[in-house]
Every structure is written in structure tokens, then in C-alpha cells.
Image (cartoon, rainbow, N blue to C red):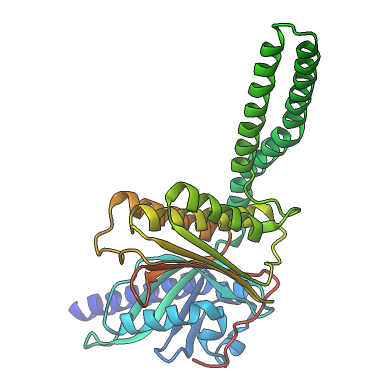
Length: 353
């Protein structure tokens, strides 16, 4: 009787194992098992569909061939942490397909252990969220493009009308003054108010559209930002641009601008910096924005306000497919680095770990 129960129990476990294998095999997500050297041991149909490598091809490559260049150090660090049996929360990252496309991926990562509980392999579940991210970016761009349109209308249409009022008022003032009429003072006041309104309209238009790619682009906008920072925040702010960024998208340029703006505000308000340096450099693969300051080093426990500013910068970077790094400077202070890879770049594939 006991033998029959054991046989039935074993049969149930075999059925469950076959069911689990079928789930792994047929999952829409990529389910991959790799050893700690990056050699692929399990590669399901979801991985074939997402990355374009057949199972036979996948077993001949290293997992790091799927990782963009700027993410390799992160993955090596994760492998070390997993060896130490640290738990890693699911996170968003990027991967490269066989044909060189870069995908946005939601990654869940765990370890497999032997009978003694020692880590022997890494298991990942990888979901392609590229289309979802694209839709999110489009939804984020709508209000920004609307603000750009409003700013343009204020600068061009409203500004033109107000300029006309100022000119007419000035002309009226001169005519009335030539006849020694008291109303000339009223005309002069109207002209003064119109000019003040023109200046205010231009300031609002620039706030709504801080980066104009047709006039100076991002580099020009950063120089204006630095000038305003010196005037309003009382810090010395230097801008150094090496090669104009080949960015043709106003939304991307505006996000980079606001990252620099937030970094300067944090440096002045929380870091008590006296000097800030903005560096903008581009090559055929990427654009790098750096904001350095000589203020206080970041405390271990950031204030909620400062932490919120960092979260905003990180959100802006992620929304344009960029990465953000904030660290202590070699001589104190902080360095905020935003790396924006150009979409045409397919670099970053390794032949091995």
C-alpha cells in the first residue's frame, strides 16, 4: 500500500516538473539561466523571440553580449552581490538583440543553489517593455510640446502685439508732448507698462521653452542658465562645451537642460557651493552632461527635499533613455553625470565576460 502511495506521489511530482518545464519553455518572457562566468545554460522560446538568438546560438555566446556597454559594470557588480547571496529587487535595464537593437527590459534576477545552499547559477526573467516605454515617452512629450507651442505663441504673437502697443504709445507720447498736453504723461505710462509686459512675456516664454534648437540649441541654453544662476543663486558658474550635441529633439534637450538646472540648484541650496562647472561633450555614440561643484559632500542621510531633487533628475534621465550617476568629487563636492546614448549607436557588444 505504501509503495503504491510513493509511486503515485512521485508521478505527481513528475507531472508538476513537466508542467513547470512547459511554463518556462512557452513563457512570453525570456527565462535564462547562466553560470557566474556568463555562460548560458537555459534559453527558452521567449528569449529566442525577444533577442533573436536560437537556443544553439545562445549556448555559444556569453550573456554579456546582450548587455550595452554602459551596463556591463553594473551586471558584473550584480553577479558579485548574488554570489554573496544578496537579494536583488526587480529593476529596469537595457539589452541588445542579435540585430543590434536596444530594448528596454524589466529584469527579475535570482540565484540557483546546490543541495548545500551554495549559489551555482543565476536565473533571470526578462520582460520586453520597449513598446510600453515608447508610449510612456510619447505621453510625457505631449504636455512638453504643448508648453513649447504656448511659449512660441507668447514670444511671437503676443510679444509682437505688445511691441506694437509700446511703439504706438511712444509715438502718442511724443505727439502729445510736442503740443504740451498733459495726456503725454499717460501715454508715457502706457508705454512703460507695455515694455514691462513685453519683458515679462519673454521671461515666461523662455521658461516654457528654455531650449530652442533653431537658435543656439542646448549649449546656448546652458550658458543662459549659468548666467542666471550667477545672478540669482550667487555662485560662480562656468560652462564648457566640446562638440555641439547632435540632438534634434526638443524634449530630450529640455530634459537635459532641467537636469543641469536641478543639479545647480542642489549644489547652491543644499551643498552651499561657491563654484559650479557645467560640461557638455558629444561624440558619435553619446552625449555626456556633467555638473560639478565645490560644495559639501553629500551626507549619508539626504534630506527629503534634496532626495526629491535627485529623484526628479533620475526620472528625467530615464524618460529619455539616459543614465544618471551622482557621486562625491575627488576634492569634495559632488559630480552629477547624465549619459545619453545616441539612438543610432549599436556599440557595446562583447565577445566574453
